Image (tube, rainbow, N blue to C red; front, side, top):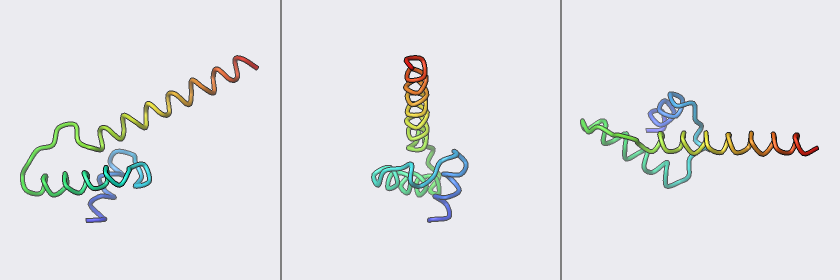
Length: 70
């Protein structure tokens, strides 16, 4: 299972440290569901990627504002 999780994370450009324990549990459940023929729309990795992009954007804006105010 760890290898499957790692492959899924690499495909999204994420690391295991980007996920909370709950998100990691959900990812395991999604992998099992996919293996059983279910389809996942907007799975946990989509939400994690979205959150990471939002954090990166906010950090960029903060840095930009700090430089502009110096």
